[in-house]
Image (tube, rainbow, N blue to C red; front, side, top):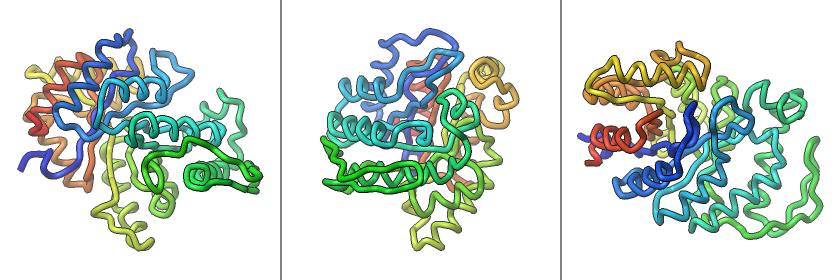
Length: 306
């Protein structure tokens, strides 16, 4: 059975690279991914970056304008370093202008995010949970009153409301076991980060599924995903070199090439993606790191979309 018939498949927009990214590439990938039948397009948030990286809401709004059906997601927005009111408004607006196609994945981020945005890291878990509650309330309630430790609203209103009801899917992109467990109670899906290892993904899925069952939720219908940085080539050494450059220059972690990424011939890549499905993934976000148009066709063929 083809991969496309077993799980949902998303693909990354060109948006973060050590090289300049042309808007022709962004438009082509968005439109071709939709034509091929990928379910969703994804970007990341990296505001202060040492490589080129587009703002997620801006580039997804552009993608919305040149497509009609494919869904639009970011994994992840580091929610606790932003105003939740601003995030709620941005993503409600994206959902509105796209006709109900937005998916927001949020995470706790790392130490440097708090330092760069000058937000105290102390209390970040409570700040994060309050922010999730504020976003959801602003999306769904006509008037929001909230009195938390970090956020306070008194009858606040926000329009436009999202098109999706009750609200756009709110996924979590977290890795710590405690955070994975929290996902079961407060999120609508989960995506393992591209920088986390495949082995870590395999350890996280049983934790998540156990927590979902405890929360009375069905693990079979709850989106369980992994971002997969990847490179495909009939010459596997070329594929590895491209992926290694990306992990070295962008992630500054060359060890991720083999621990987190997937590279090789189409047959080798298919086998590795099947292994992720075997670990419990019911959604995969495929993230080629170069030669965007060519790699999109390659991963589509591997997935059975062509």
